[in-house]
Image (tube, rainbow over all chains, first blue to last red):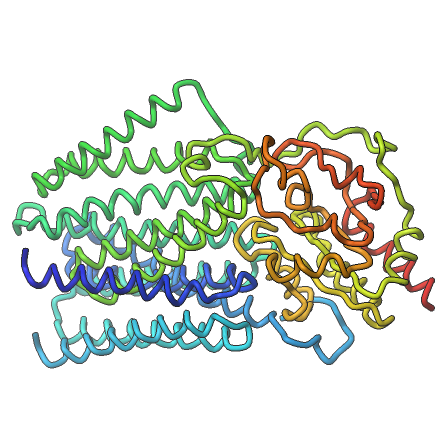
Length: 104
Length: 470
């Protein structure tokens, strides 16, 4: 087993443990934004897609890279925007205006 | 490693640290938004760093740049549009869709890497093994999430779809992707193996989610979320990018925890849900609305009097409330009561809604302050002090039968609604919940039923309370 692989697996295991530790503390109130926020984080796959696009040189790999980049970008942009939209709605006190209609 | 590559490596590391900090800030609604912005900024910086890296390497072709920009533009526009326009009730579908594209992208990465390397470089097992796993999980997540989104949206029927020979079909598919994966590891250049793996996994995603009922969706979405995280981490192993490994592991952990929480809250084991069973998503045959055996029916005025003269009211919102889009009307009613001096809080069961925490988002949208939203363990001791428990469109999670052994919901954690001094249930009909059993709460002598659509009921009650308190 190469040390590189061992290092990568170490990072993976420790990250899972950090994730469990951090996420266990998130209250149930925020579970939907948590999931959608976590969804945006796995949008980092966009970076991988960009690296793949950089080495593409024939039609098939261009098409695969295009789909991967588009998927990844939708994931990142949509995920963060919708999470922000949701979190914006959580308030400690009722809004000053008596209008209880649509916020945002 | 060039100097620039080292710098970019540190940028990725900083981004990963910001993701963790961002998740940490999510432990309170007061700081959560900042956490998300931190995470988003880190992502933006990481993407820019990648662009700089690509320019510096100079290996990317002009077509490559075109592909990159066109793909990013298309994906961003679609994602932005969906995120801006989605209704809060449709949030589970959107999260499922983002899950699908994330899983799909992770699978495409590995496919692309394997196709590009075919015939040129000999790939080691440390690339092909995670590669095969990535393709498998990513493809299953892609189609599985699409089917789940379809079920939530109502495009695909929510009831469990079981066809003849489904089980043997799944065994065949499992053999298919198993063979494909092993073959691919043994012979990384084989396109046939890759094709077999991809096809079997894609079909398996569909057959896995189709037999799962609509009511089990919170578990399924969480599980698919965990899958995507794992697939992204595997993509990190394939490309040797630590940032992907860390981010994927974080998401995998989050999905895993939520899956466990949801399954516990529904009193179902994860394997039982995946294999399929009850949780049909459609109400059972409704008993004709009207005086049922031992059920006390109330008029809007009766309910208004009880609410207006209560000191403490606990609202128990369920999916019926969300389905009727009545959260704004409920908030308006609660405001009238609060102005009259009534203490109003909300008891939220973990599986109220169609995904973890969904009900909280719906109520937050209706401008309900989050300190009033109480989790199950927090609110249950408060029920005995409540003058009225107002149950709106919730069923199984309030059924005291869960405390007894020997029925479909035995052992399921419930809200102790029956311990309140009086109970008002607002419901469209006297039909069953997902578990298909009678709710003993409805025949309790201190329970009154107000049979109506949640939205109409809220408007009527608000009018009646206002007339009463002037």
